Amino acid sequence: MSKYIEELMSPQLMIAVYGFIAFIVALYLLSVVYVFIDAKRRGIQAFWAWGLFALVPFVGLIAYIVMRPGSYALDREEQELDMALRERQLAQYGSCPNCGTTIEKDFIVCPVCNTQVRNVCPTCKKPLEAHWKVCPYCRTHIQ
Image (cartoon, rainbow, N blue to C red; front, side, top):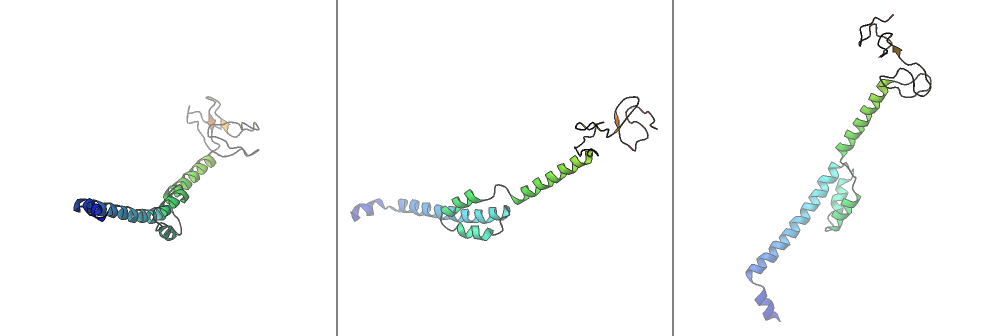
């Protein structure tokens, strides 16, 4: 039996086997580095713990991929800023003084309680802000 094994283990086959083993080891080390970097980017506080967990060959990598947060920390910050900007834009239009419903820029009356929220140009009937002295649409002077 050992005679057959010696015949099969040619130098070319041994180089291929060692190359395959080196590839697997390199892939494993890269997966550990990936977990460290990705955990840090996603804002995980104990990114080092995930890196240690990734030291369990390949099972740690799979567990990390399943349990990691869905987005990067920078993306979450950007989404929070976007939401704050949208809330500010909505608040810019104002709300009805009577019922508190959000009022859009071109509303003249509240769609819920029918309270007048803006003045109307007597000529072109477009909504006007309270402090305007001239209608910007038709140049009518407002008293």
